[in-house]
Length: 424
Image (cartoon, rainbow, N blue to C red):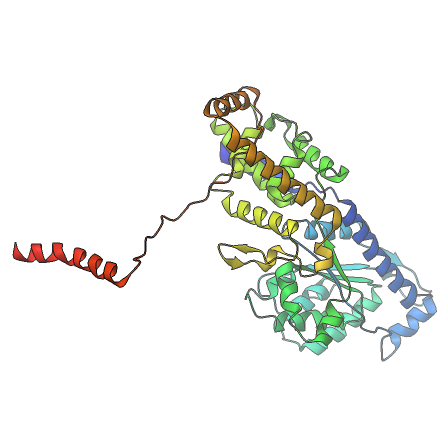
C-alpha cells in the first residue's frame, strides 16, 4: 500500500482494539451494580411497576451523580461504549394479560457533540426511547418530564453522557455544563458523566451545593502500569493487527513504550503510526525500537511529547502545577490530590526519574571514543541502550548594559554609522 494509506489502515485497526485494565473492570462493575440497585428498588414486582406507570408522580428521586474522569486518551469513552455493549440492547417483558409486552431499554448512552445544549441532549436520550424528533421546540421541564415517564416505562436503570466538556468549548464558562449535568441528574435515574480533568477543575470552582451533587462520587481512570497483564495484552493485540509491521518485541520494550506515551492507548496508536511511516521511508522490514525513538522526537509527535513529559513530571511531584511553555495545563493533572498520589504509580515515576538521571551522568562521563562505540553497538544490534535526551531550543544570551555610561556608549556606536551615511 502507499505509506499514508497503510498508516491509516494501521491506525483504524488499532482503534478497534480494547483491552480493559483492571481498574476499568472495577468501574464497570460498580456502574452495573448501581443499575441493578435502581432496578431492584423501583421494579420489585409487576404490580408496583404498573402502579408507578399510571401514577401522577413517578417514584423517581434525584440522587448523586457519578463522574468518570481521567487523562484525555486514557480510554473513558471506550470503556463506556463497551459497558453499553455488555449490558446489551434489552428485551421485552410481559406484565399481565391486559398489557402488551413492554420493551426494556436498561441503558441510555449519549455522546455530546460540540456545543450541544441541554435540550439537544435530552432529545438525544428521548430518541433512544423511540420518541421521534419534534420540530416544535419544547421547554426543558417538558423534556425532563417526558424522559422520566418514558424511561421509567422502559425500565431504564442508567443514563450515561460522554464527552460532556464538548457542551462548552470555552476555557472558563462552566455554568452551561453545570446546569446540563444537574438537569440530567434531576431525571431520577442513576446518572454517569465522563469528564476530563480540565472540566473538573472548573466544576470545583462552583458553589458547594453544586460540587456535592456532581462530585461526590468520582472515579479516576489511570493508565495501566507497564508491567500489568492488561498493558502487555494491549500491546500484543496491537501487534496482531499487522504482525509484519513490527520488527521489535513490544513486550520486551513495554516499559519504554509506556514512558514515551504515558501509557495512554491513544498516544500509543499515534506513536506506532508515526514510527511505521518512518520505517517505511527507511525501507525497513518493520518498526524497530530506533524507529519508535525517532517517532517520539519527531515534529509530528512533538505536541504529544511535551504533554507526556509534563505528565511524568506531575507523577513525580503530584502537588505541583503542570506547565508547558510557562502556561498551566490543568487538563494534564488530576484535581483530586489523593487520587493523583497513587502509591505504585508515583513510585514508578520516581524510579524512572532516578534512572534517567543516572543515565545522563553515565553519558557525560563517556569519552568521545566510548560514545562512538556505544552508538555503533546500538545501530548494529538495533537497540537503544541510553535514549537520547530531548533537545530543546535555547535562546541566545542577552548581554544587558551594566551601567548608564555603557548604555550611552552603545547608543553613540549605533548613531555613528547613520551620521557617516548622511555625510556621504
